[in-house]
Length: 195
Image (tube, rainbow, N blue to C red; front, side, top):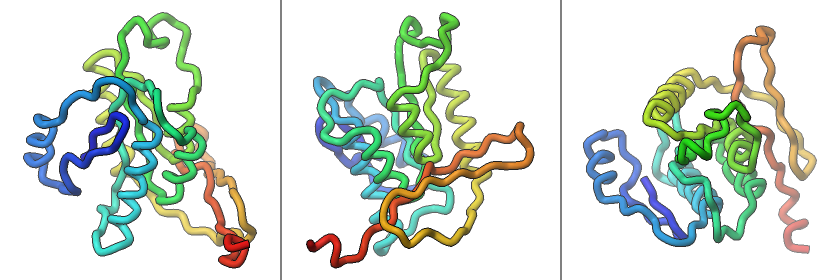
């Protein structure tokens, strides 16, 4: 569990102990002032990648869940850059954007329009949830848990050409919803980076 404003702070390490998480939540202070949400998501993705590759082991059903007001005032990174970093670890990012009911476009019939946060979540195989009432948060939590319980691993032969490679996963049943990262990046030869 991490908290963030203009920097990312670890509240507690990786754990499956619900009591540790609940106790840590009691000690989280609401950020005040400027926030670097996109930078925080990218750094969290790097921490998750490090935990999964070096010594630590991530659970099979891992996700980054961001609870935010959706306002970023200070990040150096763009949503597209963060999505590329997050997709690189193949862990979905779910974003719960807490907002006033008056700002929730679902409440007035305008519908939900894609924006940087929803694009970031979907590019990583996650989802964006606007939350303007306790029932929305409960629904989002149930959907996230349900999706994490129904994860599958698909293997394919990756391209060797350097650069971004888009991915598209479809099912024969059009009623099914598939969440998958939008693609992957192939690094160039080591010599190319040195030139």
